[in-house]
Image (cartoon, rainbow over all chains, first blue to last red; front, side, top):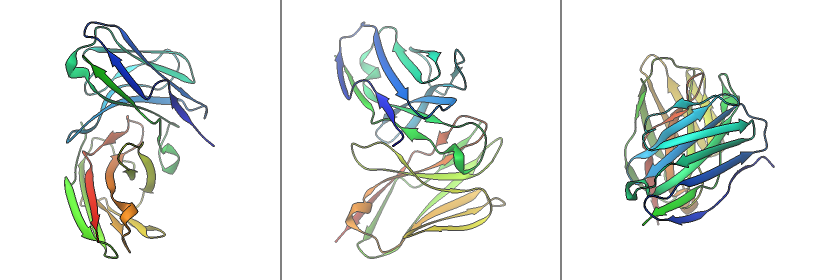
Length: 115
Length: 108
């Protein structure tokens, strides 16, 4: 059974803390993504990566950074957490290219609360 | 850039048919995908249209018209468990971009 695993389901952090959200996939996918989901705003892309050590900014990268040292692992870092970063964070992976095989597989999400 | 537009909410009766529309504007287009997300769950893949026309998978069908930059998801014989959010998405050689989602409520 294919799987994308996020390290925490729920997380509570204090304002100003450095926060690490970890994501691991076991499908040998090249592409990995971090999205943020808020009510009424859908899924917004924060960062994505097409390969190891490669990263590209998405639509809302401000306040975030990422790391991809190994193919299977993609980490999202909040350098100094703020209350407006309270949200559901979803990691996904997919194969490159076009067509049906670009189906994205999602982790269960991390609900982060910054207090 | 890319943008996808879909209705924010739809309500339908159990056993009925509902259509969720999606219009898109993209700089490069390879096809349209649909995802389902139940409350508290992760989005899961439903269907993909690479060519114009209708794709059927059980009670769910998806349609694409490239010339109209338009697609839809059709759900037949609605069941209560179909209550969820549905997202259209544009995959391809650019990062996967999603619409804001349509919340479907199935009522008895």
